[in-house]
Image 1 (tube, rainbow, N blue to C red):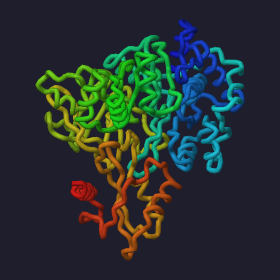
Image 2 (cartoon, rainbow, N blue to C red; image 1 turned 180 degrees about the vertical axis):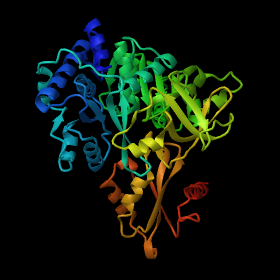
Image 3 (cartoon, rainbow, N blue to C red; image 1 turned 180 degrees about the horizontal axis):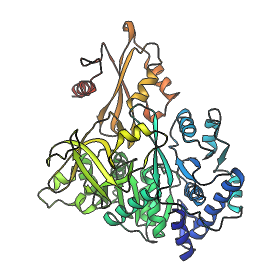
Image 4 (cartoon, helix red, strand yellow; image 1 turned 120 degrees about the vertical axis):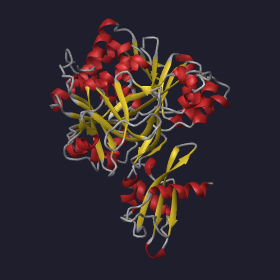
Length: 510
């Protein structure tokens, strides 16, 4: 099913319902929203020959145009490739080339940065934050979305792999429908009274939740700041009311701290869904104390978007059950559209409470990685997704995360893969060996620390290392700290033992 059909249904039944807002300014009703999407789709089809299965990238900060563009892409049966606007232009260019992207929607600022590295496959870069973009709205709209089978890819989400190279997760219409089923069964069903507030990047979890609100005819709000500003969010929510928003744990902490300092309670916020990284136990306790029962935790991956497990608001807020602490330390129970197991290396289920790898079966699980059959084979086994996360299930079915079998670092809700940083740092002549590990951090969840061995004992200039990273990868990926060592701990096979580095960092912090 084409997801644009959900927009058409809402627009037909309630064309005057308010849909898109910037701040409190109404930008478009659902009728106008649908017409604009249909016109954008017609532009792509007639001017650039975009059709079923083609990939169209969206490299934009949060905006109301973001949703118009997405539905315009789907209207003609193409696949959206949302790319984090914070990525380095070189990283973005690699994704564009790998996806074979023909058209890119972006902002004027990002276009300037992309111009020098845009791959040949890109035929057109369309800037959405200027007056010229309004012409797209007046193109003769296509009468209806093209038909789309359930297994057709609609969203190509790039997530870095353990080798440091991004992998394209192929998300189909059926995957999205399964995610919707789990959400509506386990979290909420939305209505025109509700409001979706896009403070986290729309290229990730915040954006993929848009479907629930289009189906329900809810209002879509993009803050005036186009991002996350605690004071702005608390003030805006108190006026527009019934707000649902997705936050990384670091964002929740900032919001709670702001609420405390300003004597607010989060009035107007109905639901905050948090995920994308570990939430400290003390932080969620404080969040509920300050803002009340507004919090829901989800556990998901790009490969099974937002759809593995859920810790419902009543469980997050409960302090009466004798096991409330254990439950609050978990990531909840399997969502309604998902099966979850914890297994040993031979895929045998292990007893309750014991630690193994978390595997998942669901219609929400991706069909595979884009043009990467080897990675797909390594990740999907007999229709079960190997998450790479280590966890345990208790007798009540609550899932707890214990570690990641991969060495991924989650900092501020964003994934950072050490190999990516290591390869850049090794370009410096005074970096002989390097290993990047995560160190727990109260504000960010984790920070990246680069452990470096220099040849001949010469110490590299830290500012030069920082500059090298900034020139090649996104700013948020560069190490927050550098540790100069005489040698890296290694096993008998010469492989760096990262757990010893983490222990060294923990001892140094203590």
